[in-house]
View 1 (cartoon, rainbow, N blue to C red):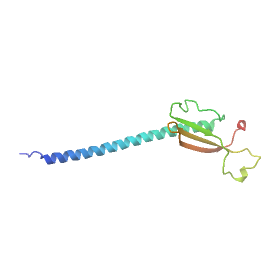
View 2: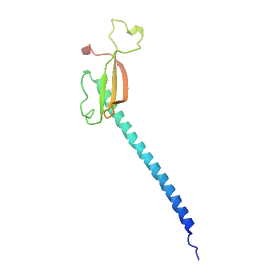
View 3: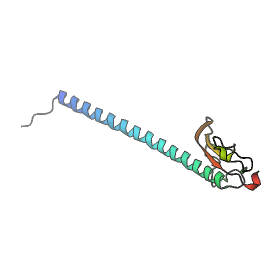
Length: 130
């Protein structure tokens, strides 16, 4: 005849089950947080790349990206500035050459005006922008 489980054995089994479930839920929550962060990082990178491509290919440097390139309700905005390039060699600073400009593009989160991503690209201005 089989002997039934003792109360101590049942309590130990329930304790092991509870610890296993707690570990599983902790891992699941951490994985969910990582997935949310990865999705946010991807969205920011995608928006930034769309805006950077628009401003680097656009000849009119005062335009804003159209909504199909940079959606208006995305929670992010783009700041663009065209400062003179810095740290150039003396050979490029001659007065008879076209001034080398930089294109500074920043992706700004709207809820806490923080610059999320930025890039500075040196480029020559077009004839029209001088």
